Length: 370
Image 1 (cartoon, rainbow, N blue to C red):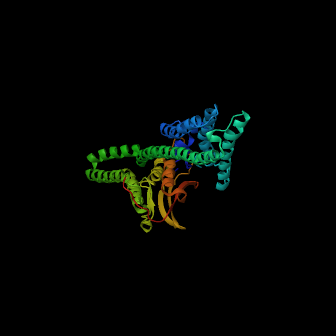
Image 2: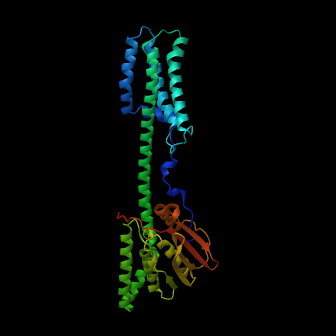
Image 3: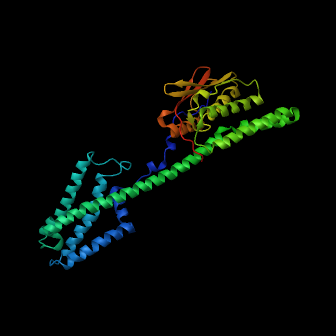
């Protein structure tokens, strides 16, 4: 049976940054405002304004009124903006309509200015001050709107950049891990060791066969190492390396299975991640002929709609996912990264045979050396 591994994309593949518990909106805003670059900018505006409020006002408690207004502006301005216009990647916006959110933000600014600059002073019987005149209240609303927008947007942009960097770093680690897993799974170590042992025996019994086998094995290893530095290659190249794998198995045991494999030359415009089909071919041998299920292995490529359907069929029924298996999941992950939802992998139990079907889109994609 082919693979015996889970055909579903594991959630562990997705970047871990998305599952990190983030601080609350209030806490994250306070932390961001305390960052030296923002705290210094706020101090440059707030301190002179507070000094002017104290010196140019006759009211003894003018400083307290000014400090309350400035504190409310500094906290509520960016906090309100972030609550209404947050990064969708972080959380949904409070309101869907942008105009509605702007109205709420403007109303919040006007209400904060009225509460701290008009209502509270009158409740405590305080006289007029520099910051509570009609003209100053209008300027204060403008400061609330502009300052809240600037600080809130700056905080969210910086947070988004930090998330993007964390995601990029995590994706880099995931990609490197996937590449190592791919190289490890592309050639079964047991198969490699058994082939080397067989070559060692042939060196005594059939030197010519040993030499041909060494050359074939060397070529395949060279192909695999070279493929690890490419992001894509054509479907015919992929099928050619699959043929090399099957023929190496047949070198050891010519009667192990019958092979029928397409050349794929009609699909030279189909790009695939290098060696993405090799785990399927390895499994076809491992869980078919090597698992005491002799018969024919068939690899075909046919046009299907606007794409191509590649099938790998082997003797032996499919018994479902195998615990600990990574090959099938790795194939799905690499197909998803290369083609998104346009590429799929399906495993079917045909009774006494197993079929793996890979659907690929057509069209050339740029090849990048890494």
